[in-house]
Length: 247
Image (cartoon, rainbow, N blue to C red; front, top):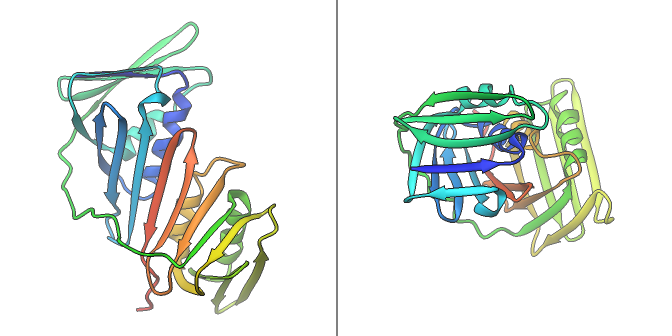
């Protein structure tokens, strides 16, 4: 049994949106430390890790560690109806997740059926990355949108003090170079050059939920999966994406 409360229901809405961008079902682990989820997308080329600490909740009562499997697409549809100023109370009841939205003069309660989630091998990739980039999230969203106009994949390259992106398609090419200037590019560190190519559709789904004004961290190693992460409030969102391979 558990009963947890968020004073701002939109906080949970934003977190779930970052998860459902890649996976349509998953199992949340609820412990005294907080809520977490680890899931692989149906294609098997990307992974999402989510964690929200107990301090993010105004009420966090659990009798014992538990996990709840949910259809995340259905959960996201319910949360899309969140109204300004509402708080959210969640608890388990008869194998359903009860979600009560509390406004200044109203209450709404949904009950979402819990499901059995098929477990896949969900070990976090073990990669010693050669480069770490921290940059403003909004410019990265723009870069990905620019690249998607001409290609379905994008290449990232990091060297000491420089980060470059390139994309090539039948209609043209894109090349963009950034130095660590402290404004857009907060940090570029590379023990050696790192370059890899990734699917743009997956990257777009990963960066879209990043809150406006937040930074995004990218870790690179040549011919290895990319690691991309950012914060939503006190919560951590981490993605892994396998390198793009031409068929």
